[in-house]
Image: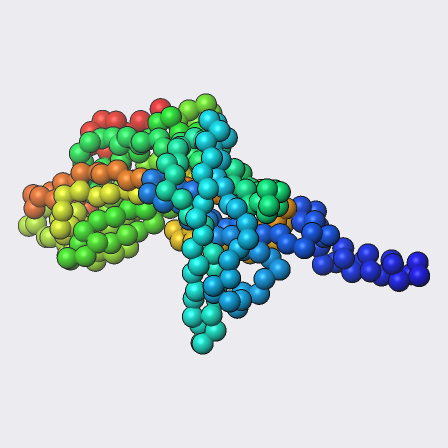
Amino acid sequence: MYRLIRVVLLGVLFLVGCDTSIDPVRKETYSIYGYLSSQADSQFIRVKPLDTPLQADANRRIDATVTLKNMDNGTTHVLQDSVIAFLDDGDSLVTHNFWTDADVQPKTTYRLEVKEDGELITSAETKTPTEARPTVAPRDGNCLTSFRVRFEKSERAPVFLQGEFAYDGRTHQVQINTEIVTPSGGTPFFEFVPEYDLLQPRIPGNERIFVPFGPTLLPPRCLDLDKDSLRVRYVYASSNWHEFDVNTTDPGNFEEYVQNTQIQGGQGFLGALARGRIAVHVDTSDTLEIGAQSNATVPKTIEPRHGDGHLF
């Protein structure tokens, strides 16, 4: 009998693994997947009983109450259930998206709770990031100007940067891979040169202009833009976002994380995002030219023309 009990206990530990947040005796527990956004009109969080097959009846109700609590002021909102069914090769995949039109605030801690008959079953907490509006300097420049974008009053650097510009009748988006610098006790910032960090991957290079008895001239790609401005999009994320491989460009695609210290009594992920964008004006006149020798390449690093290229 002792050996049988030992085998059963080992089997339970194998199934549960290291996730001690899930009570092995409880019949039901829940997975939570989603994120909060202070810019969104409505918040959607996927909640699912872990003991229910994915192909369960689409009309099955979750006999639980899901609430979202502002831990800073105590305001609580009850989320409404909405059943979403996805069809894949004839199979129906059912999920429950709980939603609320609550006004989510930046720099605020929120707690999501799933209760049955008033008893707390599963919960998760996250803190929304600060919506710090960035500044750009200089205000105007050209393709070779080194623009600096500073994120004033930001608690941490953005997790994603993307440039956007209009060319050939289309809107193009290019991820900016420039390093974000955060000085000790200072403001996060990054610098980029439009010609190399944004336009080069999408716009073909212009033909060189040969001037008799003069240097070879290379027209910049800014001349080909449909508009005289670029946009830089950025994404702030909650601190727990960095603990998991969650794609900020498509945050609805969450991985199945079995062990998550952020989820109490269940599984999943709950985070928070804040998005924004800033315009950068560039010279698109046909008089701008970049000087370059015919047997040389245009240098990667060019001094800004507006006198504010100092790092500090």
